Image (cartoon, rainbow, N blue to C red; front, side):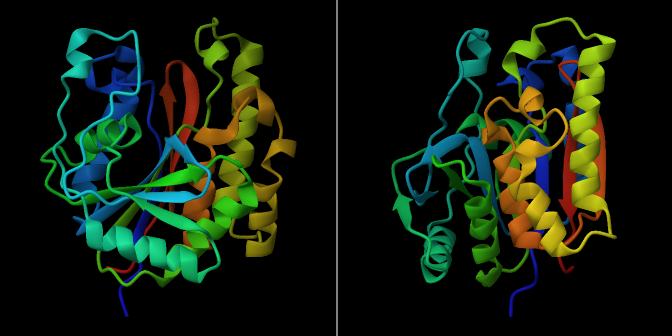
Length: 269
């Protein structure tokens, strides 16, 4: 029986900006860099990125995936970033089998590379790029219950010292990022962050209640202000589906002037 994985939901910031010295990402850079030193070194990493949606769950299965610079309008050096982490075809097979055995359609994709939801935060967490990685897609349906089910299906993986990362952003309103921060906008941002934090760490909630809140997340205070579209929140649903318990740690940081959260579930060490 493999030990339980470490599970981490991160707010990954705006495109490549965390790697370009942007002052509005300094707290994020500090947090991820320190986490990389504090976490046990994983044998492999599964990243669920907000930047990959597919009709059915898809898993990268190439031995050496290229990078996908899936952003535009940034300085030339942002298109020269390298993160030559190897793939993990054996883990990709296990993941697709675990999903299929749980009744969830899954495919392997040997051609797709790593998008910036993987290589930007991992360059801060594990800059040596020597840990095998795979990516697991979101579903285009954006159905919250199904993403919790995807995470639950991964509980059957037999892989020691695994790290599963949900790479999104707990606040993702692109228009609001470019507007001045006001007392009202900050209160709206805080209302959803407080609800999300309580949902993920409150030990008084049953797992049925916690799961129900996450399924009905769009009814939370200021939910659609913080997430006009939910692709940056759903990696958290998958993380919770795998964990099925309150998060052990929560960190709140400011990124691009907005409050954003990170959640960590410790595995068996």
